[in-house]
Image (tube, rainbow, N blue to C red):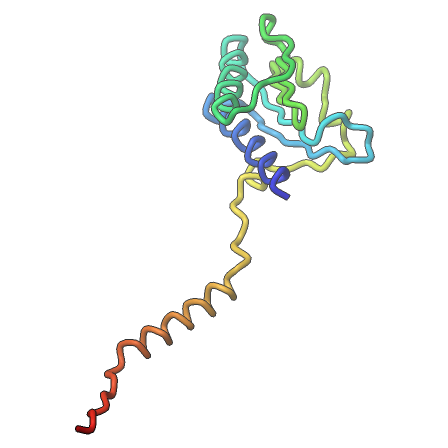
Amino acid sequence: MKKKNDLKLQVCEAILACQDKQADDVTVLELEKDSGAFTDYFVMCSGTNPRQIQAIADAVDERLEALGLRVTHSEGYKQAEWVLLDYVDFVVHVFSEKARQFYDLERLWKSAKRLEPAELMAKPKPRRTAIAKSTTAKSTTAKTASSAPRKTRKKKA
């Protein structure tokens, strides 16, 4: 369970890095386990020119390295048409518009579940609300009982 949450956090950080550099059309594909996919997620985005594409790739790398996650393989940085950053459990693709249309990974992996970045980045709702309410009720009862005046017995002499 912890690994899945860590993975989502890592993917969210990659998305935020892309957005910080004004990447266009940020898309996330969650690949199916039985599809033969070699990873769990694809994060895809586009840049308008080679310098922006490299800046997006650098931002993703820096942000994930700050979390202690290092890229295991990268390709295409110098040409800056399609930069691929492989983090094993997810892969970040930074495309030029022309390369993205040509390779059309969304169509190639059409069986994958398409996620909006906001879906991954949404905070899960707390599941312990009932426990929190009962704890609050108990503490309120305890405070009321402890703040009530105590009856003191007079010692018989």
